[in-house]
Image (cartoon, rainbow over all chains, first blue to last red; front, side, top):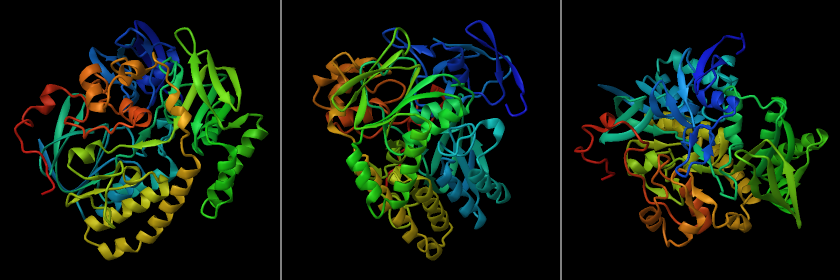
Length: 82
Length: 425
């Protein structure tokens, strides 16, 4: 971020440019989408930001239920949220 | 895979860093584990590209020089046998063997349910700060900050510097209690800080409302309005985001899993931070919410105690106790008002993982009954959010957690089931 390094990730089928050091949760928030749908189908977004609440969980590269607030974006990852 | 250490420290916040550095500088083989991708805990969280906070960097340098093995991005999930801690990272695990263990697991935010608190756009105050530091932009966003404590003006200042438009800071404590606190001898220092922060908010034209709290959040799919009660007035504030900060809840789950005894919700420790289980120490917020200074002193005490330097450790006890007295005074000033217990309406969800409403829970008599009948607390957060909320609303005591501490792949647990649980006797 300080030196502007950035790369592309894929969020819900769309390419998104993110800065190095950005968490997947921050990317989800930045895109303005839900991280997951609740049991009743409500859209939810990350809440606690510290790996506790599990509201930020989404699928990363096919691995479901990842706590996105604790995971940094890597070039080319595929995130499926909501 | 097993690795043997004189000391394993869980949590690389201020306390864990201090404990690991202090012990390693005495020649101990130390491993420092943290769930987060970087050290510093919540308080010293920075934007990753900016490098660690100055205070954290000082400890990190000492840790590097003293050859502490660090495992960031790994979390403790279970203790398959006495003296072994299993840590996990995206499906992989490692067993860390320890002679001594320091638990520096910190605290999480207390969330109090009210209608609309599950809407996107509603975040923890510390949570929103963490999101901003990890790349989320709040530039131009209208933010209401609500809850209690000196954290609120600090969060307002941080978010404002990140470009947010702070609509209001909403403090539930009444002004007379805050003034008493400011005037109190022990609170003098924090009182000044607090007055300074409140003054800075006024200068910036940000309304700081005391004796006011959030009644509800409204919006279609995401937050649009926040309803607050301020005195006798119900106010509707247009907002893009609501940041909530209602005190902290100690993370005692790992200590409980290791059979460490609690005292009024906190891990019970002796003069040198040892828990009821010999060789297991606990420091920081889990032993009593006390902030960054108390936590670092406790980390040094534990590090010295583990390194068998009790006399040196004892020289720090007085400083720790002074910190603790000061913090108790702070907690009294910002005690939560009873009305907040009545914030949820019948349809308000209390358990966000399983979507269990207040109505369903109100029919139950205990946490255990609630779990059995409604699945409250049975989701992946394992009651960390709804358990603390239910304790506040219903007065229920949550029972000790069961392993694993977090949902993990079955493979991570394989081989653990038949091991004897760790006991203090």
